[in-house]
Each structure stands twice: as structure tokens, then as C-alpha cells.
Image (cartoon, rainbow, N blue to C red; front, top):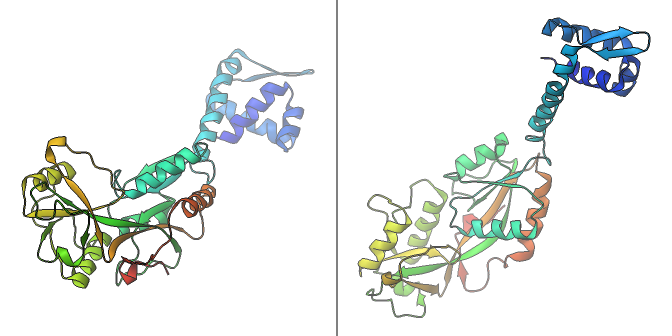
Length: 311
């Protein structure tokens, strides 16, 4: 159904005259008559009775009018759902328990007037494809994976350096430490079954291992964070890494310890990525919020892989 004809019908019904409808729509009266005639042919009914005083709705016209108004409202909602600035800001993060999730919750509290859609994509290549297609407006990632620079149309800004912590069970040899140095971790088994080869986080931990001679094992199926916590709590020989801002809850009986890592402190570098040519208007507000609420980068006593720096 031709929405211009439907819009013309509603304007003529409200005005009561084709001439006034033509003026409202900025078309000729002849164009109004042609649109109405085409709509009537398509519906197979008369919508107006023409008189010297104007145009009045027939019974069929009166029945069609509320549905015509709803058609126009639905069409406007459909356009608004994809019109930049009228639709929600769509932001990707890896998991709902990550530091990025905390950043977005803080942004939402500070700017409740901005509608948000949060999605969770798997890896940076998937996220980049979604940004370039317009499926999302921004993504939190560690960039860029060695040998795979960001496309020229993708912008990035580093927003948060998240310190790593060691998570141990109560019987682990380091469980009583208030902090541990990276050197102290040499020889200890660090178990991280969620590391997937080819991802940006796998590249990060590969560099961490190479830099400091650590032992990180990714063996076994990944049954999720609850299973990981159960195993760490019950296995004195195993520990794992987690981000300082990662939100996890475990049973009190697990007795797990979160221990800061120092000298230097490995930090996971979170960056925000977006498309250079069509940023959502709310993206500037998000960037300003992140710049005002996150700490500086490359602080003294921290370590991050050189490739993580945005260009």
C-alpha cells in the first residue's frame, strides 16, 4: 500500500477539502485527487463523497481512517528504529560481568535519558563486522590483535586499564598473601579454560606468558565461571586470573581469595571502537563520560602489550 496515498487520505479527511490537503502536503490539488483515486481503486471502495462544499468521508472512509492513522504511526516507528539519533545507542561488550558492563551501568545512571541496547559478541572480528554494517554503534575491546590492524574506517580510544588479580582457593600456596609479584607467579599453574585461540584476550595472555615466563593452561572444556570457581576453590595447585572490576559471586564456603598482582601490575587494556563515518550522536556523550570517569593509562608500575595501544 502506497504510504503517500494513505498520508494524503488522512490529510484530506482532516481538512475536509482536497485543496487544503494539497497545501498542507505541498503538492497540487490534482496530485491529491490522483492519490486518493489510486487508493480507492486499490481498496475497491469509495472513501470520499465530493460536494461543492468539499469532501466528506463515506462509511468505508470512516472505517478506514483509524487504520490509516495507525499505518502512518507504524511507518514512523519503523523509520525511527533505524534513524541515527532516534534509535537506542547499541554497544557491544564481551560478557555481562566485565569491566565494560560496569562502565555502561555508570553511563546509564549518569544519562538515563539516552536509550541503550547492550549486545554481547564473541570476538573482535565479529564486533568489527557489526560496527561496519551498522548493527552496533560501538564495542569495548582490547585492540588491536597483533598482525590484524584495525580497518581505516574504525576509530578507537583507550578507556580503561584494568589490573589483573590472582584468584586462589584457601589452600593455595599464595592464598595468604596480601599481594603477589609477577615473579612470584612463575612455576604456579594458572588455569583459564575460557582462552580461545585467535581472540584478542588469547593474544593478551600469550604476550603475558612470553614476557614473564608464566604458566597459563587453557585445557579442558569451559563450563562457565561457576564451574571455574568451584574448581579453583577445591584444587590447591590451581589459580586463575580475573580483572579487578570483574563481578563474580561465589558461595561463602569456597573461601576464595582475590590477590592484587604487582611489580609490575598487568593491566588489561579496554578500548572503545566505533565507525568513523557514521557515529551515533549519543556516542560523543559516552566518550566524554568515559574520559571523565576512568583513570589514566600506562601508569607507572603497570604492564600491557605494546600492540594494545590505539593508533
